[in-house]
Image (tube, rainbow, N blue to C red; front, top):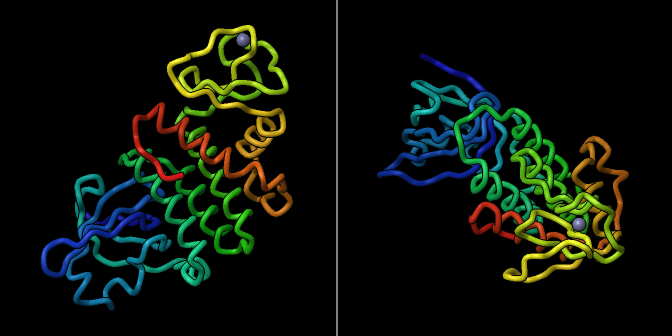
Amino acid sequence: MRHASKAIVLSVEKFGEADCYVRFLTQKWGVISTLAKSARKSKKRYVGGLDLFCHDEIFLRGDPKDRPYLLELNVINSFPGIREELDKVMMAGKVVQWIRKLADVPTPMPQLYSLLGQTLSLIEQESKIERLELLTLVFKLKLLCFLGLSPQVDKCTRCEGPLDPTTIFDLSSGGAVCSQCPKDVSTHNLYLETEQRLLLRNAEQLKLSTWNSFNTNPLQIPSLTRLLTQFASFHTHIKLPN
Ligand SMILES: [Zn+2]
């Protein structure tokens, strides 16, 4: 049986003398691993489509969920603009790692496939480092939302009541907690200002097609990025890159 799907390269792992296992986020089957025979001997067969982040149309033989053979591929976009700049390679690498660590399952996730494709296109176009960091934050929030792991920041996670201007972000209860409610004292307390809560909410709800008009205070980005990584690691027990 021959199968075809659009797919994005998440990782490439050497296998034996000349072969590779290539992990893709596919449009049809979620994340799958494929065996690319002779990938290291003959570059011609896979026409440069096995580099990290490449967006390809792939053709497989065998069950897509059971390590099928990668027969051939067409490159849709190799994102050359990402590869030319180290900052962009780093950001794209983090985005891909978050998917590999949190969504490494052969379950159809077409929205996640679209989210990754859109994010990579925007990383390629973006020129400022703060904007790249903000984009990565938006991506992580959207990924967590897709996985049902959004931090709650617009009302108290415990009582659903209103929040104070400076509020405690309680990792174990899953979001901001008002001054009336008890907090988990076993974890390190993190604080959130109103501006930061708004940024998290707006970033999660942002339509990526309107990315160019999305702006924010760049000073907020690093601390929110760390907070989100801590939050996701706490709830999944998986170590994630910031
Ligand atoms: Zn409360």
